[in-house]
Amino acid sequence: MTADAQSFSPMLLEQLIYQVRGVQGARLITDPQGQIDEIHVVGTPQRNPKQIVRDIESILYVRGGIRLDHRKISLVQVAEREAASTGRRLQLLEVSISAGEEETRVEVLLGLQEQRFKGSSACGITDPASRSLLAATATIEALNRAIGAQGSFRLERLQRQPLGELDTFLTHLSFVLESGLEILLGVSIVREDEAGAAARAVLDAANRRVERLLSNLNI
Image (tube, rainbow, N blue to C red):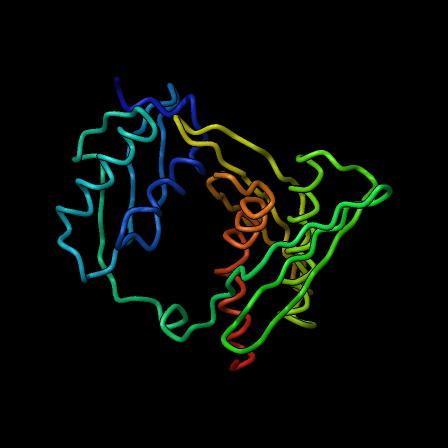
């Protein structure tokens, strides 16, 4: 199989590359025919660069069915981000679902060191898809409580999307602040817990922005 990315969005493939140990950033470029032209990767210096490149080739082939020439991968290695080393990354601690006769409520609990931030969302529909959307919405509420008045996250879209043999949730968030609007994208693999996967996809989209915000607050 050639390096054809037409079956998958570049964002999905980039998020797949993010799963390789040592990868900090990835940007995929395709030609007009949809074939992968270049992959630019930022990696940590702790791993052998040839091993990172081989792992990228392997994960694209095994998970996405894409056979790629290693010469298309451009890798630069830099030191770990300071924010990542200071523990300012929010963690998903709990997703709880309460289903009654008239209402389904999902509560999400996020943690940052010793701090806790809770969000909740409810509706009268009880199917699994609505629970995933409620979990995503509750995560947005918890995120906004965590960052305070610095801005606000908004859920634009939650979409379930296959990636090869994987089942994933994709999220599109907007981050609204005085100076404008930022677009954030996230992905999470769906296993048994669909609501938890939706919450993790939202957190994946938001966490890099949250790290910078909490650094400004010196938390």
